[in-house]
Image (cartoon, rainbow, N blue to C red; front, side, top):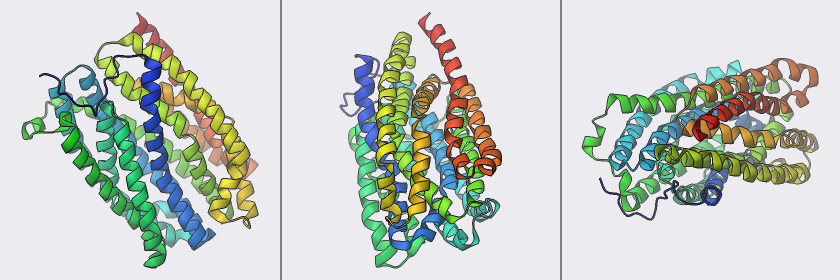
Amino acid sequence: MQAQDNSAVKDLTVGEPARLIFYFTLPLLAGNVFQQLFGFVDTLIVGRFLGVEALAAVGCTGPLMFLMLGFISGMTSGFSICTGQSFGAKDFDGVRRSAAICIALSFAASLVLTIIGVAGCRELLIAMDTPPEILDGAYSFISIVYGGVVMFVFLQMLTNLIRALGDSKMPTVIQATTLCINILLEPVAIIGLGLGIPGSAGATIVALTLGNILCIIYIKRRVPYLHVRREDFSFDKEFLLEHVRIGLPMGFQSSIIAIGAVVLQVALNGLGSVAVAAFAAAHRVDGIAIMPMMSFGIAMAAYTAQNFGAKQFGRIVSGVKKCILMSCSFSVMVALFNIYLGAEIIELFVGVEAVQVIEYGRLFLIVTSIFYWSLALLFIFRFTLQGLGQSLVPTIAGVIELFMRIAAALFLVDWLGYLGACVAAPMAWIGALIPLAVAFFLTARKLTR
């Protein structure tokens, strides 16, 4: 089938690699920041208008959010790897068939995740030793989020499909629009309607629903490559299993990491609501700070998938080298920002009078920022291997992250208190980086041959 003329997509198999990766990453970075701002806005509005206890209630659900949404993000990204490989190979029938598989698998996953999440979230909060005074608030928030998880799944799936075809700009516009809607709706729900914490969660689900509608309209008007026909749902078994082989391990990998965060949250809960609130606020700042490194990594997944489909193996290795230089440079800049200005941002959540919360949050940002360079390398190697269709080593790296976070929760928090929780993430990054780096260099040697 002949290629269709469409300015919304980008062929990443031609052109100078560094320039392609950089300009693909810029809107991707903005989109990821907007995505993180959902949690940032939730935390900010709840903390400022409902108080520190409500902030702790929403904050302690962070690992459970990561557990579910991390799986969704990883799974849908994995599904779209196949889409990007088909696009790079100029197999446009394969692109549509891949999109149809992504839709079907995402729908099935939504049903399963909703049932499991809603039925089990309160028991999970209790198992995490959530302080009794914030348990009901935490449950009211996470149960609504889990109930609307289908909106998270399809927004992630649709934006990942668009990115797989080389368009990183429109997903950013959609995410920015969705965030603005969320920002407008949350104060209305929390304060105007008096719905409190449940209003915060409900406003987010409504905003995500509108984001999905925008995605569908854009695809219908501008991305004919993704115009799925009825016959595209006649799945080829081998092609279907290829999506599952890549997507599910990527989803489970993120969930494995999240389990470590849940165990760490249990240890934090034992330190009291002040420590929980500080960790929640600082984690929101950290989540936005690491977006440049994550965005470069995600860009490498799309870049690698297209070039692998086009059999341009030398371009993959060249792109990784140049991406390392760019991403590590960004890691230094955001680390310096966090170290010197992070405490001022945390004040936005709790006010200047919450001195201990601010100091705890500042300590977290200093410890993690020093090791951002390792996170930059981790993202590049992980997403490049995934773009090549490899899932085993990234999954092993995820297991190592899990054990590192559990070790910090079981031993370092008892020994060092709050500082032990702060070093959990850097320990996990370095531990996971080792197998990823070894696997990439062995793979690069094969590709250059």
